[in-house]
Amino acid sequence: MTLRTLWRDADPGGFAAAILLGTAGGYLCFRLHVPLAFMIGAMLTTTVATMAGLRTSVPPLLRNGMVMVLGIMLGSAFSPALLGHLREWTVSLTGLLAYIVVAAGVGILYLQKVARYDPVTAYFTAMPGGFNEMVMMGGSLGGDDRTIALGHSLRIMLVVMTLPFAFQALPGYDPAGRDWSLRGLGPDVLDVAWRDYALMALCCVGAPVALRLRVPAGILVGPMLLSALIHLLGLTAAKPPGLLVAVAQVVIGSAIGARFANIPITRVAHIALVAAGLTLALLAVTVAMALGVHLLTGLSLPALILAYAPGGLAEMSLVALSLHVDAAFVATHHIVRIVLIVLFAPAAYHLWRRWAQRRGRTTPPDIGG
Image 1 (tube, rainbow, N blue to C red):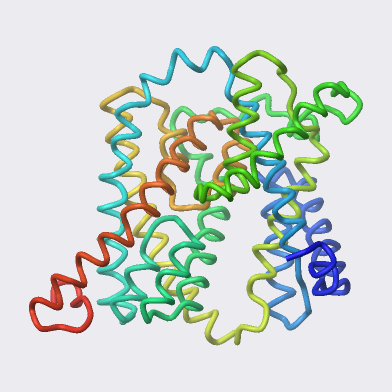
Image 2: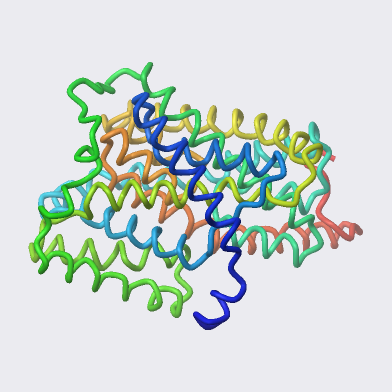
């Protein structure tokens, strides 16, 4: 798809509405000192407006550009001092496999027995990650791809909206002395040297390379890996300016809200109730797993909860940055989680289906059925 095609297919009116609403909501939440203000505010205002029938849209090209900014920001958290802590992450990274199995099992059981989803839709909706891959795979195997997409979108939204506030009650989380200005997101625009801007811009090359190599979440992971490399090598210690990070939050939050366009409100309401139950179940597994690893290793409980939380990589990384939790730790765990899900979830489904066919069924059986 060429830039000319993207421009021709764009909806200027819907885009203007989404950005104006997102900016207004983000700024209001920022003034109210809401955690992750620009993203949560943009997400809420755009979602409400979209559900009310207002036409909103965010061009994929712009969203991808802002995701690359986020990737560069995350890469800047990988300092040379971090290399000495990698060994400490072995247990928590290994625990991701157990988390995925338990979380997916709980999710499938809930979606089939309570929400009465068909086995294919339940399976791919329950996976705690791999949004695009799960929607495509589930749809190709006969599941309801729109229900799968909406379920994942609502789960991510609910996690983003609840975790920043729930953190206030966590032991070990201390928001005292937090900078509630744009400098809390990053340096001023003029404080970053041109050489550092050039190095960070070069990291954007990682996106098309990662997509070419079929790396999951390549738009974010590619720039993040290159940014991590230049920071680990000590070539720069710079971060993207706070204003640009705020813009990225507004665009990503507005894009989430715009996903609900052209979907009947009754359907959204029904799936939202189902997603709320699923999110609650997955968060319970998240907290239990994080607490177990914390007691075993002594790693930060807030960081472990964000690392295991069933939100998107971009969204959870933004939450980590907003709450001043180790973003490199959180991002690394989410990348590993996505890779594990993308690699093994489809294969596990095919094994499940083959086992069902041997027992004379055409589709995998209901859990417990």
